[in-house]
Image 1: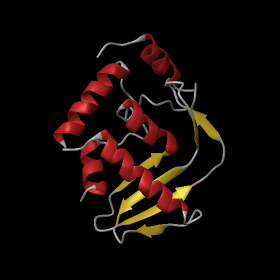
Image 2: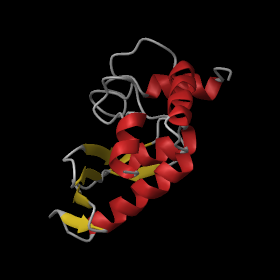
Image 3: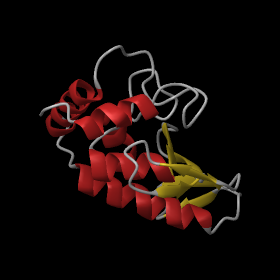
Image 4: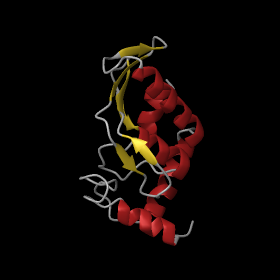
Length: 150
């Protein structure tokens, strides 16, 4: 995968303070191309596809919204709480604007959790980007597997 001009611009947009205060890159000092290649490999090793993970996250986010800010049980398996601070955020790849919705998705049997936003679901599904290591909304593939596909 080549670092295209669009990817370079997206990486600039992911820096702290451009779209969100902490940025999207976490503690990493590598290109988003290298992060994406690594994460595609890790997702594959975990037996996950970006499409299936994105579908499951979108489903849980929508079901959680029914709780109007209160935690709801989804499919007897997950406890989901969606927070809507109102407002919108642009995608760093400049291909959309997304609600500031965030959800905490907890697998009830283990208590393990994933934190996700509308924007992070878009980044995962459309760009295969799950944020840099140390980023607040990074979703580690092994945790995704345990929480979403247990």
